[in-house]
Amino acid sequence: MSGKTVLVTGGAGFLGSHLCDRLVEGEAQVICVDNLQTGRLDNISHLMQRRGFRFIRHDVTDRLGIDGPIDEIYNLACPASPPQYERDPIHTFRTSVLGAMNLLDLAEAKGARILQASTSEVYGDPALSPQSETYWGNVNMIGPRACYDEGKRGAETLFHLYREDRGVDIRVARIFNTYGPRMRPDDGRVVSNFIVQALAGTPLTVYGSGRQTRSFCYVDDLVAGLVRLMASPATVKGPVNLGNPGEFTVLALAELVLAKTGSRSKVAFRTLPGDDPRRRRPDIALAERVLGWGPTVPLEEGLDRTIPYFAEVMHQNVAGV
Ligand code: NAD
Ligand code: UDP
Image (cartoon, rainbow, N blue to C red; front, side, top):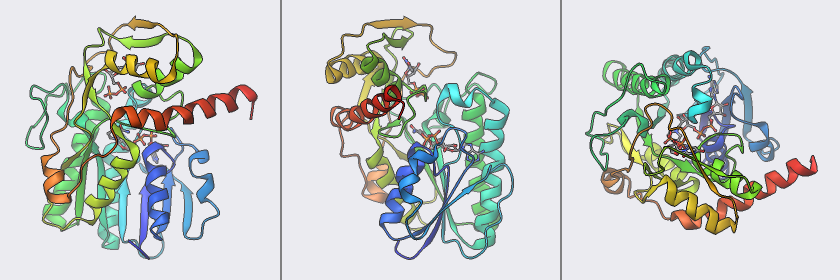
């Protein structure tokens, strides 16, 4: 990795900022591109003074001109939380599809390898569990999540076509629910919501019965998987699932967060959003085989590392820091 020039779109976001950290530590020259829609400069402020780190505020739906060589591109630009991506669904769709095309054109022009941050959402509400890469999914193309799910599916198609027709060196990661420090307290995803609610002593909002399942991956594990996938040989042609196969109901997560925070918050049941997948669990056999990668941080330990971050942020907010 050392000495490479690496472009990270969405680099001021939750996953992107951790990835930038890791790349800078590996002595890459990092160009971080972000429109700050859901990302924050706070996430990368510690990198601003580092030699070899550069931030460009830019929306990936507009073409991006960069002088000089680029060796690798990680395309993470896209809001990932349902309430965030549903706020301006047409822009979300444009970000996924037009953004992918603009970055693929840049990769082709620079001869760069490019990795797409795809998602378990391409499997929709899966009829099979666990989900392996061979499953084509079950997505409602006109439902509330379609702007994201179909946008990400379209981006995968584009990546495939640019490899087949133009020989662009692509990698595709299908990322399953990932959590950790630097998620926004108002992000809206379940782990951040529950921790913030537990720490604030307000009810934990469980949508539906809480019997739907998710598999939660700690951010450091996920970033390690992304870096391994980028470094993998070109024989790794298709998408690769990255996630932690440990499967939990949303209600079990709520109970775990309550136990870990020592909170006396209650659980409050709320309406289940439309098209909410009933279960999600990655089959990571392919990642284990071709990347030698697997998660190392169980949910309990990941929560122990994440809760203090939110406690600190909430403390600063109260103190007006
Ligand atoms: P995030 O919302 O924290 O980060 C997304 C970043 O992209 C933000 O910094 C945002 O400002 C930026 N962005 C959004 N639209 C943009 C645009 N048009 N131009 C430039 N920048 C733009 O979310 P995250 O969890 O860090 O997710 C990062 C990527 O990983 C996303 O592509 C997401 O789809 C994918 N992913 C994440 C998860 C997860 O659980 N965290 C799961 C599956 C896939
Ligand atoms: N969820 C919940 N309460 C919340 C936020 C989310 O019960 O405050 C549920 C949501 O309905 C879904 C699961 O938790 O079933 C995961 O939601 P998230 O938005 O984190 O991710 P996604 O649905 O995209 O997997």
